[in-house]
Image 1 (cartoon, rainbow, N blue to C red):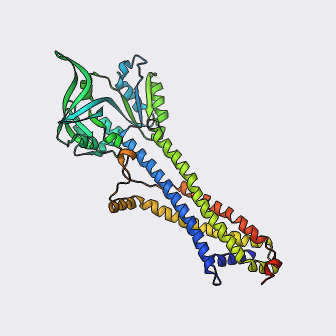
Image 2: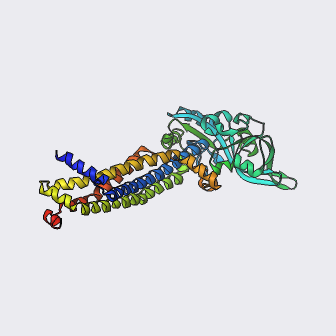
Image 3: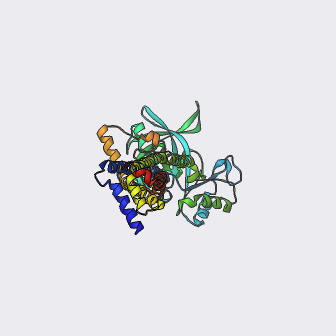
Length: 424
């Protein structure tokens, strides 16, 4: 019975019954302030999550999960000159490791690409098309051609689309690859040069790769860079990418040591670490926005308590205990907090789900590119709401709001009925 009348009175106060429209307006403003704070927090953290997921996806589409390379400088008989000699044995051993689904040898070196009056420095990656297709997802992002065109002796090349734009070339054009490998001639030492035909362009969505990576056949690269039957390293694709650190180290130990190992979590560690730090800082800063909204609840309840002093006195005189009065105003504040948090969560999830299309619409309307791929590595603004984050935000907002009700409710419970009714 007590609980029912406390809920009834609280709901009437929230609605501002009895012609007290201003009190209803205060409740609505408090709810909206809390909802906006929660929604902003959800959208911002969703953008950080989306950026991290998109970055991880795009990185893994270009690089392998893990790499096994020779020690620099050479630290064993199997890795002279910093290259892998018995790489076929190493590849076979890698494929026996649990969780490894593909292993691809590669040669990686620097070169200068020249087309007419234009030139650009780039990283040349020599690959075996069949193995590369299984190990790395970039083979599925090639436009106007196929990685299978990189056959031995064809001297075909596949460029990133940004690099091709810098050189002013397209599929079918030819360019000259200048390798930093000296060739003795009667007039002195000259760099080794070779003409290549462009067999395709790829778009990974990562500017650092699209603007500075080119792929050729592994044996073509070995001839140009005079590497014989050696390779730079072996790239691994795993069933679970998060097992890469342990798997590649186990492989190096199984091969007897003398190798350098690297995985995708360390090669781009600064990216993910900075995202996590930024996400934590933004959460702390934006919680202050929610806290400000919670203080609005305090102000609203203080005004309600002041306006309802006569009602509180009457409740006390007919037998309501201080704890019942405390419950009335605690429930009112909790209802405001619950409704505001729920509205904010719904609004935040809706905005997060449609944020990318909204940003594209604003860009078209204003004629402005918000994200420069040269700076932010991507031109889109992805958003992904994790339920763990949403739950944490909602709990934080509701707890702050519940705590904010304690002082006004305590003041209401301490109201003296005689003093409140003296001038009524």
